[in-house]
Image: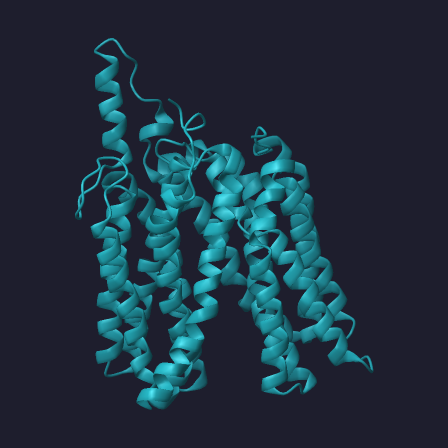
Length: 427
């Protein structure tokens, strides 16, 4: 029975995928806001604090491609367990770090663990979820991650309040990673039914299928066994076309998170009011994840990606022309909500399209490359904003990102119907 014909139950992925995602993201959300403060308390400058915080994104980029290679060989669940153990070691390094440099190295390792964990769960869902509900499932996965990031800062604040020491917040990530290890080890492996730390890799599963077909069967197609760099070369057509849209979406999403706090500071909006406005946007963003999945499953991927990308671009353009208006603060609030709506409508789009394009039997190598492109956009946006703000103005930076957003919408409009229409059969 093919995966499309198999009955799908949400509970089959709720505990092995969604729950560990919420736990891991909660730990990450707890430590992200306090890393700069911890570096500053240790005597580091603002520049050093920013560099240490940026090590997480650098680690994510470093880990994207090799993680795909590892997952294709050891399997998704073992890779998730290994990444959680790596996160535990990273938290030990953070707690014991004598200098900001050592702390930065530990945060870098956490970034590698984070991308391996994320890629493993993405690969798992790609292989286990039928096309008819793929977008809803992956949007829910994205919603689980956002839920964790939403809860994490409150948990971290509570720990700091109870202990009086900001560095103790690293224990939150350590406890969450340990909980993931215990949970994943206790669950039976979907491929073998066994419990513990072992698991079947996609490559071994393919070998077993070939053995069952007999000695006269054809070898696996290149897409099933190609390494990461062979996969990059073989899929260069789609990566060089649709990949631009993914890179720009990563950049616009990162720009939104970078630009809004800077805009609030430039307008003189107080920390409390800025946090309330941005928090309202986060709540709206989170609340739309299932709507986005429904749109993608019922109407097609472009119906989510194009409005989301275009909306992010238009929102940045509007913001660029409101800085000196008399009601600039009100415009800021309105645009923050509009950007949240646009981003929420596109929840899960990058994971869903990546799953559509990947080989369903061994998706990890392609998904690693796909995530690398998206993460490159995410990492580049703060640099673009910083550079344009220094050379011209914050409004110019917002306008430039808005133009890139509109271009990204056109890329999706042109290439998504060609490469990943993704409209699933009804049912």
